[in-house]
Image (cartoon, rainbow, N blue to C red):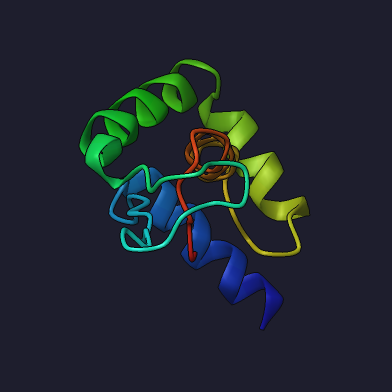
Length: 92
């Protein structure tokens, strides 16, 4: 079972078919900001994805994915952290 999941994950990563699409609660706001940050969401997603792509590698993504309890790649984790630090409420 674990081998099947690992194989599917590698295949998904290789084909880049599982692009990370964060789910953002645009009506809510993070506890660190007085107002919602949704007006900047499109710009922030683009910037965060670019930063994550520049700071992760194919091998690094696979290693991170195999060790991650949530089965995230390093790129997904960096994107989520970037969006959270910019004040967005990321649900996934």
